[in-house]
Image (spheres, rainbow, N blue to C red):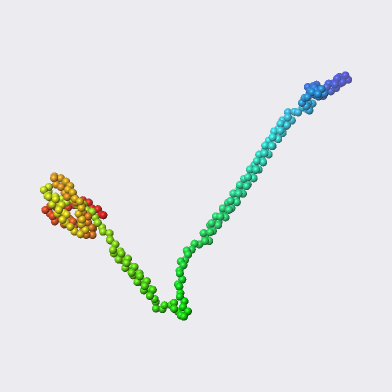
Length: 261
């Protein structure tokens, strides 16, 4: 019975020992020791017996990554601060310019009300007075003077000269150009004699012009003659009345054209 307890206690002791389970680590440590004693250059293994676990390695990577991110964040914050300062300067400049503009507009709005444009009164020449030491009342004319009569005379002369000049100016005479169609009785009428009869009509304000014979039909021709008349002296009714007196040659008279000159 005691042997069994001794044997059980030994097994319990071996159960608590983990040297054989960590044999690889001890071998690595022994190898590093001998390499260092022989002068062989190797990488230092500071934590062979207590290697870093996976969470510790992950924390180290996270810390390194956080360090790089912090530097980037700091640089970005500095850039934003510089940009903010620049924007503040621009805003201040714009505010100052706006204040100047408001002051100028206010002054312009006030200026028209305060300034009034007045026309300068015409300056009249002061009358010249002739001083006479002997008589102080010599410049006073109680009964008028001859200056008014002279001015009235000059004015009347100028009016008469203007009226005379206007009367000599030729007045505009209204004239008209009339084209007459004088028709004979038949084809046996002497057209030359007919034209002589027409041109024989003479009166003040009448001037005969060119003429020609225009065929009508069946061998009959009419006389087409032009004349210029003064509207105030000669009219178409008078012409027709005078020409129809030659009833042996003239059948009728028509006004082909009438134009004001």
